[in-house]
Length: 264
Figure (tube, one colour):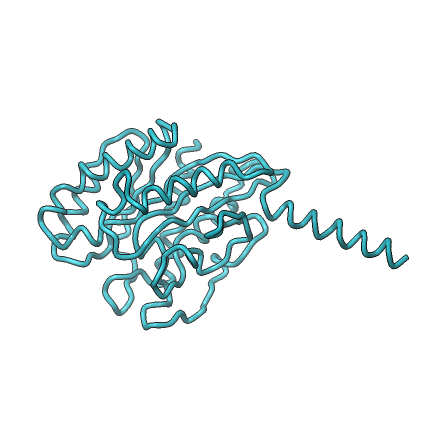
């Protein structure tokens, strides 16, 4: 009897591990890249994270994260732990995005959302150009997310929130459109996905005085299948740079709406 119980527990454990890795079900995968507001600083702008996790950011067996060592695991805040290095991390838009997508019932029954965090704080767009460490890390993580054994996976979109570091000099602001378009073309070519959906977030804040110039540059990106979600007006923390936790929740829902609109 004891042996049978142990065998049953072992089977249950293996089954749970298999499902947690995405095995036996479809997983819709999203890349999360950019700088600190994508990495998540909600509740973490005073040197420590307040550990407040809203219901919209709670863990779920149907929301997975690709870990720093390239394993699928149940996602939880801070989503970018071990990825956005040397920073105090908090709530970002990824978890509320995933919950909103699942609540929409637009995915196949029992499908999971797979989140691939790649963001790194304080990085200009040149740090994401083809051949850089961050660019190559993002592509390696994307490929791993799709190639790990178990389950049926598809890369649905790249969620991109970056540009605050490009507001410091006029030159970087003026070049932002061309650099962003080159980035999108390179990612699509290197992943062999010419129509990969990219949803970019319009800046709410910046590290310099050329915020409006970068926002205009973001809106000038006219490549096919590039969508724009505007973060301007969302609540900002006391550091005048990072979104608050409620703002991140709202942004996640806005990103989800932009993605879901493409499924109509």
